[in-house]
Length: 244
Image 1 (cartoon, rainbow, N blue to C red):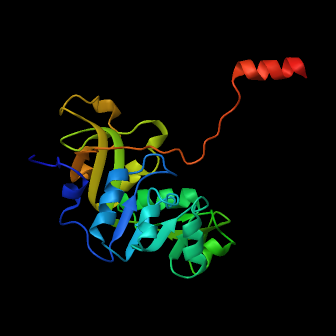
Image 2 (cartoon, one colour):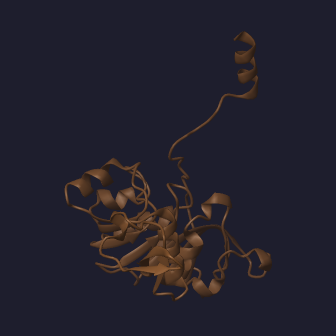
Image 3 (spheres, helix red, strand yellow):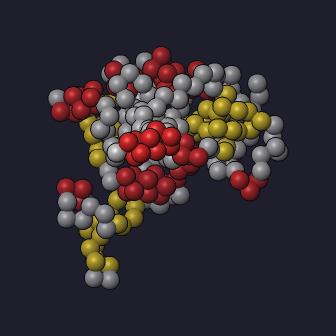
């Protein structure tokens, strides 16, 4: 198909990947992750990757599959607690890790996408986070300088999109995706629903198509739940109280 629309993940990634590149991957836990693109990247065998993502999936799914295949050299993240392989590789020195407070990571990506090379924040002052970084006093308070982040490629996942690359995310699956879409030299979006150009509510487009270079409709989405947390049904709760 002509324009930005591609047939599948493999076609969307054609000519984009190279060894040693930096990739931003949207998602939070397993919510809103570009499943098809991650699987396609694994198939290419591209290696020595630096990946910017809130976390690195779980063992056997999400970005975790790129850890298993040894394709990731360094992670720039804020949370790694659900991935035992991540922990093992980091502690053994096989994986580099740049840890960020979560809000700082989000702002570093937003700043990179906005063309802001650096900013000052109070988060991390006086801790390991600030080691080796410039600090400066503003209005009697100490701040640490953080650099903006950009990437060779940003891979994002949206619920709905059109052939121009305009994207709409669904609820919490929005997470890091919009800011990453602005910070990649090339941005590829995988979507669940491809709709005609002009059919999206213009006031509710989350990522304008100007940021998206290629787009495709994903063939399969598992949408795994990382950690199931439920509570008893109301009737059960009532019965338990009555019998107490």
